Image (cartoon, rainbow, N blue to C red; front, top):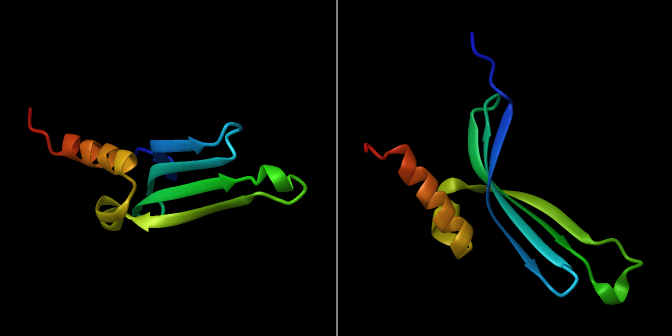
Length: 91
């Protein structure tokens, strides 16, 4: 019997803003084989350079694939649409 990695992920996109990279976002397509769940994970890290002594704003949220296809940022949303299209390509 084949053993699957519990959580598999593929990077859909990332975005960095600011001269020092103080605002970063990552979007990953995630498949959790233990839970049989398929979703997009959005992670971010925000640093205020004027307040370096304060902790940065770091977080992660799970987004339903259909919701992401309708409402996600353009570049990662199109990357997801391309990947899904390849699954159904009969060529």
